Amino acid sequence: MKKSKFVLLILVAVIFYACNQSKNKEMVKKEILGTHQGKEVYLLTLTNTAGNVIKLTNFGAKINFIEVPDKNGKKENVTFGYDTFEKILAGDKYFGSVVGRYANRIANAKFTIDSVEYNTPKNDGSNTLHGGPNGWHSVVWTTEVLEGAVAAVKFSYISPDMEEGFPGTVNAEVIYTWTDENEIIMGYKCTTDKNTVVNVTNHAYFNLKGAGNGDILDHEVVLKASAFTPVDSVMIPTGEIRPVAGTPFDFTTPHRIGERIAENYDQLILGLGYDHNYVLDNTEDVDVTVYEPSSGRVLEVITNEPGMQFYTGNFLNGSETGHGGIVYNYRSGFCLESGHYPDSPNHPEFPTTILNPGEVYETTTIYRFSVR
Ligand code: GAL
Image 1: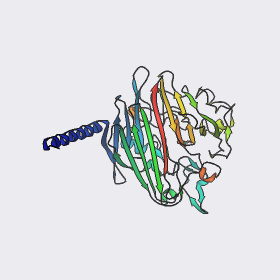
Image 2: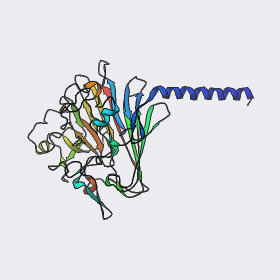
Image 3: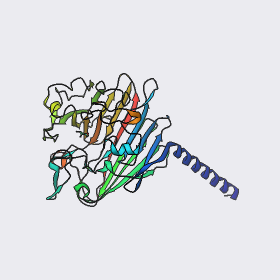
Image 4: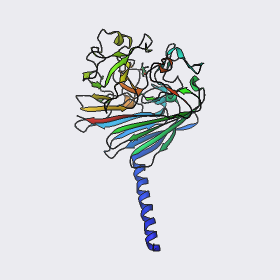
C-alpha cells in the first residue's frame, strides 16, 4: 500500500470514530445530580433518533423520566420521578428503581439454603420487601455510558456478602438501551460466589395519559397469563396457582383496570386491588399490552421471566410530589414488575430463584411505547 493511501485510510477511520463519539455524546448526556455514600450521582438523559427522551439515574439504577408522544404527537412524561436528588432521596424508594437482590416479598424474613437459615430485614410487617430497606434501589451504581449506534447505559453494583442478610457477593449489572423504536430494553446479569437467591425487577410506575393526569382505571390491559398466585392477608403467596378464567383477574382478553377492581372477590380484597403475581403463559411475543384510549398510547412489556407482578398503585395516597409539582394520587400509576414469583425461596414448587457460583443470572425485559 502506498504511504499516502495508508494515511488517508487512517484519517477516514479517525473521522469515523470522532463522528460516532459525538453522536454518542448527543444520545447520552451525563450530569452530576449530587453525591451519596461518597459517590457521584448522575442524571443520564438518553435521546433516540425519534427525539424521544428517557432519564435514568445511577442512584438505585432508576428510570426517572420517559417522554413519548401521544396519537397527536404530543409528548408527555409517562412515569413517576423527581426533579432533584434531594427529592429522589427523600421520596418514594421504588419509583423507577431496579429492585434487588430479591424483588417482592420473602415470608417471615427468612429462608433456608443448604440447611442454613438466613434472616433478612423485616420492612413489611414480618416480611422482607424488595431486598430490604437498604436494597439495590438505595445504592449508588457504577455508571458506564456504552459506545455504539443506540443510546445505552450500563449500571453495575457489587452487593457484598450478607448485605441485607443475603449470602454471597453478587456482581450485578443492568444495561438500559433506549432504541429508536421507543423501547427501553433492560438486560440484567448477576453472578455470585456463594449459593444465594436473586430476583431482580424494575419498579417503574406508568400513567399513559401522562404522569399526574388522573388515575389509571381507564387503561385497558391484556395480560397473557392463564393463572396467578393468590396471596394471604400479608401478601404472601399461599402456594395455590389459580386459573384466571371466570375471575376479575382474567386479562387474557382486553379489560379496563377499573372494570372489575371493586368486585367482591377475595384476592381483590386481600390485595386492596390488583397487586399480584401473574404466571405468564410465555407463549406470545408480547406478555402485556396496556392501551390508554384518550392519548392512544400503548405500552407493551416483553420478558423472559416466568412472572409479572401487576400492581395498580393501591398504596399511593397523594403524599408524594414529583416532576414539576405533580401529585401522585391513589391509583394514578400502575407497575408491571417482571420476575420470579414472590417468596419463591420458601416455595420449592415455584420456579427456582437460587443462583449458584459458576451460573449466570441473565434476564431481559422490554418496555415498548407506541400509539394506536
Ligand atoms: C409493589 C408491591 C406492593 C407495594 C409496592 C411498593 O411491588 O407489590 O405491594 O409494596 O411495591 O409500594
